[in-house]
Length: 429
Ligand SMILES: [Zn+2]
Figure 1 (tube, rainbow, N blue to C red):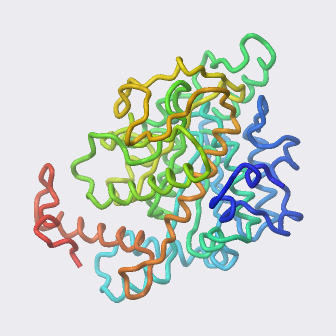
Figure 2: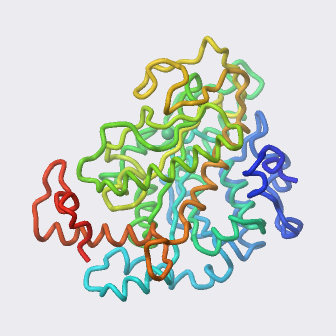
Figure 3: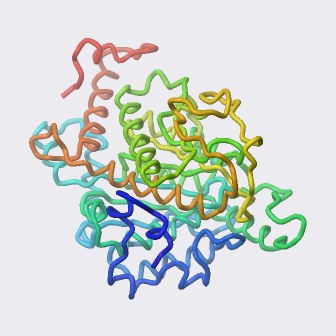
């Protein structure tokens, strides 16, 4: 059995990550790699990750692998489209519905309701834009495998109602570089150290500062997925942070927030983040924080840009290890000192501080599996304010698009705006 079901406990264990008979025909990542995802000092490189996703593509009718473009060095950027076999067979239709709903001007209310009810919520998950934040590129293999084999609720409901778009690395050149570097120095005094050159040919770590100008081919490829081909309504980007603070950040974000982003986007973002935090806590994962460090103002990176386009933009940041080498953090090394956590101690947005100890790559993978997996569940909550039972996520997205289309024609946007909302005129349609 895959390690995740052993680790998960309580409600989460009952609800998820229980493979079925399909597992016999779809190889687990460890059957291909020769080691379990998250094993100390073992990393899959991009060639292996690509090969494994091709195996899943061949073996499963729940996953289809798309080539969405080339990296600077010419590697293929892969996007795994994961959903029920019926949904994948109709993927072109769902893309077309999403395209129409992304620009709903001219559609009648009835047409919109029908399209929302017929469509699927589309969720984009991107991993490893920062290449040394390596865990998500590994986790992606396990998450993809799990979604191809599970026969359990709520995951079958997710497969029926949601189309997951999973990119295992959106900087494949850097992924390959840092794994090569890690392997080269394994067992030496340099094990787990940083490379002395950039992990993106042009931009290094600033590959996630490119999203307002689209200089890099990797940025353009993901933006095509976002705003030209799939129009996801939810976007999660997965990162890692320093090792001596909280174990994981989930939304809500910190202040300041972009004043021209609709308040409903923040409320929905909070809802998704809160489900992540609840599920992690149910599973006994300590040290999760929200309202910390990462603000809702900066328009330069991945999912941040999506807020201005009425997409629920989500971020997680996990405490790092030294690539795949575990670290031990003593209690007196734990630090606050960033926005939302002046001192490292229990507070309302950080109710269960991690007490210190060993921290492994597998810990990061586990936190990411839980938080990422439940985004699918949050995305397919059945509608309770639509006569058709349509997804409230998609419905809100469409209504916001209409609202801004109308307000752009009729009123100048003012700082701290949304006056129409505050006067009770919530929607344009
Ligand atoms: Zn990062």
